[in-house]
Image 1 (cartoon, rainbow, N blue to C red):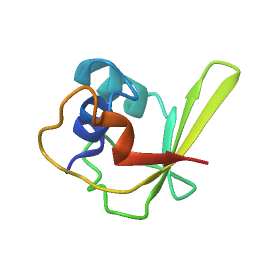
Image 2: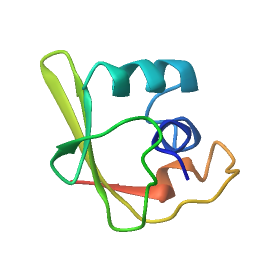
Image 3: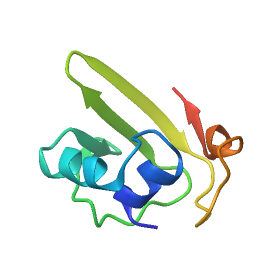
Length: 79
């Protein structure tokens, strides 16, 4: 699954266009590397998103195409 879509499906970022813009602006890194929105997310990847002064790190646990709002937090584990 593409990184921008994963960020939207897991509800880490609310909109896919915002996720795409964050990736383009180098605010998102996977396993310590800044990546493009088209990066293929795999189970076990560590995603870091920087929101201004704050930073959010999580480990990918699953990558389903569609998830309900209640199941979204089960897609990742906060580090």
